[in-house]
Image 1: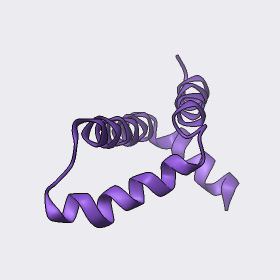
Image 2: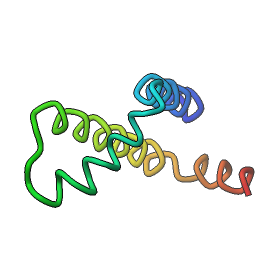
Image 3: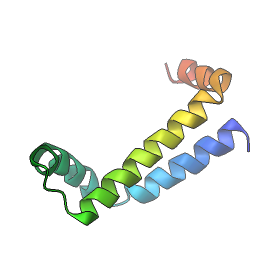
Image 4: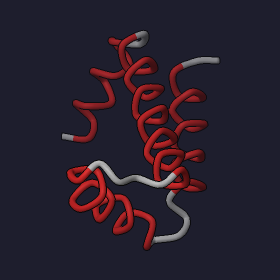
Length: 77
């Protein structure tokens, strides 16, 4: 897969993950409250791990396609 395809797949995954708009607020709440106090339930841990893995996958896409990533950044600027 080329850079554009990988990025499209990642963005589609993000759309699925964040389809429910309240999920973003839930994650902030987990971080602000539960994570600071060390009382995360299993569902919260799974959600945070999904988001972390997703963010890491984007970092690999960008790192492994530096020239394309730079073009995208310039285009977005």
